[in-house]
Image (cartoon, rainbow, N blue to C red; front, top):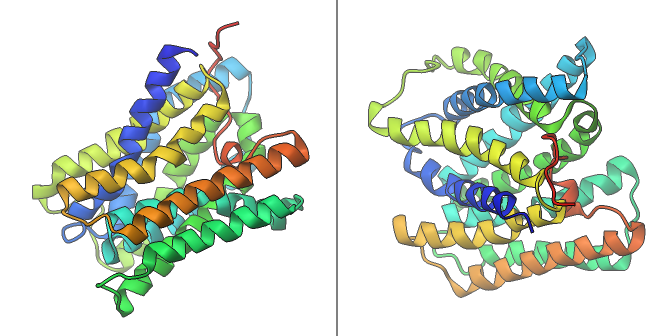
Amino acid sequence: MHKKGFFYLIVTIVFFSTYEVVSKTVAEHVDPAQLNFIRFLGGGLILFPPAVMDLRQRGTRLNMKDYIYCLFLGLLLVGISMILLQYGINLTRANLAAVIFSANPLFVALAAVFLLGEPLPRTKVLGLALGFVGVGLTLSGDDGMHGTFFSGVLCLVLSALIFGIYTVAGKKIALRIGSLTMNSLSFVLGSLTLVPFLLFRHIPLFNFDTTVWPQMVYLTVFVTGLAYYTYFLGLSMVDTSLGSMVFFIKPLLASLLAAVTLGEKVTLNLAVGTLLVLVSIYLVQCSVVRTNAGQSPIQDALPEPSIPSSKPK
């Protein structure tokens, strides 16, 4: 195993696992659309220099179709999925949001069935069913269940579903222009789709409560910018399957952080539901490996490494 690549993935997991917890602390101070505009614009610009270097190494030139398609992907990711995720975090709990969104490989597999015509063997059906039961179990027995809570849950589920569609839709162009370039462009262009929405609601683009500027800097620079770069860098050094650690470890670490920093309880239902979700992801992964001898939904949810590989021979 390439130790440096493993280190980069661990750094990524830590950053990604803090997202729901940190963003929960700014919920009352920054509008969800404003938060996503700032963090994806900044994060996309941070990814821009390495993306340009990667394009040069690939010898790939972008055309207008690439920009238009990345704008479409940005609308899916930044303009819809991440907005729904932020509303879901604001209306529910950080630990619940982390568990539901970490189940996105299940939605990737589901989207691949409908959009790409991938087979649906029994193991995959069992995995999907188990995963959705797990998500349902995390919601049961909650003392805070009310209309607003369920609205938040709906936002989280729709966010994960649209992220799955985004992942499948971006697979082909990522192979051609690289994941760094695809994400950098979709982040920046996607953030720009929020400008009319913000202006229409008379929300300033960059003016927000200065008491939360440390969290905003952290979410922009570290979670959205550096974390994606260390993710791609790590994947270029180790086997792609190790990237699945993000989906297996994030809900566990995020729940622990939410308990320590926000005082959120780790209930038995949440723990068992999370375990079922993780088992379901594993089953869906195995079903695709056995059926296609190809990539798993977890790996499909991971971008293709776009940094020159430094895997040990």
